[in-house]
View 1 (cartoon, helix red, strand yellow):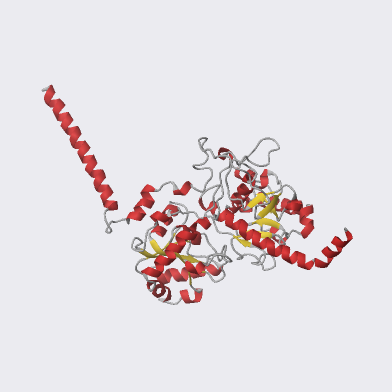
View 2 (cartoon, rainbow, N blue to C red):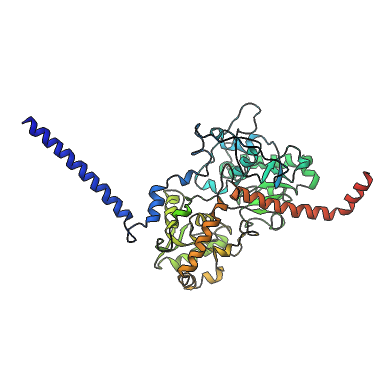
Length: 465
């Protein structure tokens, strides 16, 4: 009798093991088999296999372990760099202190050579405007031999040797986290910091030298620097767009348009779903009811919501919204970038790293790197007046053949790395591209200054001999 019980127990265990094997196999086949699968194979790889994409550009995800060691390399030679930058040693409350970082007494900057000591930037939609964080980290790392990086911009300690003076105020973070008045105070921390910054800069010899024209100030969030922008408007701003600025304060001649930091996962070029593997023709998920120029979103919603192969719904970052957008864009051929409260939005850059051909419906938009990058090779521009005509947009997009779409898709895969914020920076990434844009603006600035002062400079030179 005991032998029968042992045999039955073994038989039952074998049956359970075999059942589990076939269950796992059938689930795998359900997702992966053939071109008729419920989920296209490339999207399956995106969702199930490549779980590390999200953390690649955050220095404090996979880079903050003690086992992560970088080989020492030669520090950047200032004479070989494209841009020489002098940075003010502002107190931490203007930059990394806003992230909760506290160093040792009299320590202004974190040790960027040790990844475990770099403060994390808050996730979610806060990341959109984190440009200030990446540029500051990159400058600090130019003095650290243990961090291999792009050598486009380097820090110099003598302001007279610098091409540009960098103001390390995390203005977007200050607005996002500290713009509300707390307790019984009369002013918010954000307002107080702006006022203190204006007072500080106006007292610096570097500012007085050219009236601030050779200073670089980051104000990427449209609502950041609302107080200081009017008093520091002579400086070069790093912005998302010009939607909430007057021409006197910000314009394309002197300022730099930087890409948002995307919030969806980056698709690896080798695993990017092709034309047939993207069943959704047109994709939009976001706030639909907006003010100012964003009312067009509402008009397009009523035109497109019932169209076949169109995903046009309300969405937000919460409740898994970013994850849903990642999956949805990866499954779509065209992604709508429609003007909202301002001409630009993060949605364009999410589309680019998803290799979903952007359809830009924003007449006043300014685009990053447009002086060196031809967006018409990988994007479609549609005037708002045409997009709102019944049937116009769908006829246009349905008329684009597979071959043309594939050409734009291939171009997207080539240019997508230009929109990645990374630490350490790499040649051609977003940080590197922004420094090069700044360098081109500085060249124009110096040209105008020298041309205006040619007689004074000549007299000074003759009198010095």
